[in-house]
Image (cartoon, rainbow, N blue to C red):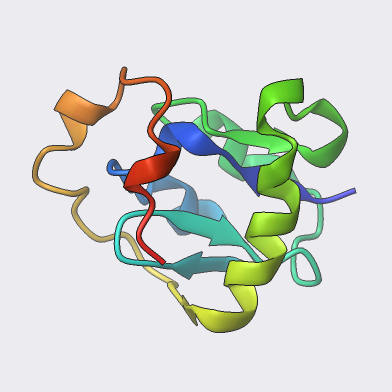
Length: 107
């Protein structure tokens, strides 16, 4: 099992989760984070840290978010690791409660 970042993270990119990851499994894109599945050790620390509740165990990803399992793996191969907390995107609070924002994902 690995953990997966889902749609709620898009256009927010809070990095509280990065601070607690013992394996530096997070990867950073322009407006989204993903988890490198081969580096995730299933510690669950990141789940509680995410203020928008975007992180799930792959077995618990909501049905309408299952495509994010493959998306995390795909983007993790292309994006660079992020190993320390950075400020969230400037308008993160406005986007935190927005649903259906897949079209906002910048690759």
